[in-house]
Length: 256
Image (cartoon, rainbow, N blue to C red; front, side, top):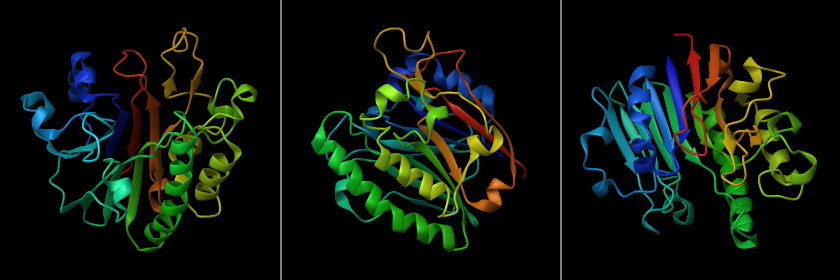
């Protein structure tokens, strides 16, 4: 089973840069997209429904052209969910889940707090609200792959400029503690860190300066999984040869 996750930073922009040609070559079973930045009625071109895939979008209803998530699946899901029950979060188009038997694949877009204190406080509220939801998922007997842009690094290995970002959103101690607790005591598995314990690869680079060329990046895109799937991890990669977005696609292969 191959799953691809990508923050597209605008699905129409990524399409113009060849992302769908690349995805066709990956033969992924499931593709999770974040930050589609479009309403579904704007995506009438057949490219936005790749051949052989079942395609599902959850747009932002609170602000058009903002946020948004999507899932493309080779196999038709038994069920697709798009709400977790808090309108402030749901209406920004930050969650979609496809269920295949006992497997759930989630495309998740955790808010950024980089635009100011108001959004940082909203991010903290989202984190507090999501924690018990993740706990329930962890214990309900289903297998989960939580794909997406979490907008948080876990450690010094996950960011180029560690010291200078200690007071910046995405690298705040409270954020890191929350995510490390999720992966630690709450029992979830970080697929990349499991497969590459000493890896120092990044998935996002600022558009300012020459951050991407100089690899001044952050690892903020994850596939976080339940332990049974953690035992089935085969390989992972971050694709950087082409630039579809300010993020890079993160690809994970799981044993069947």
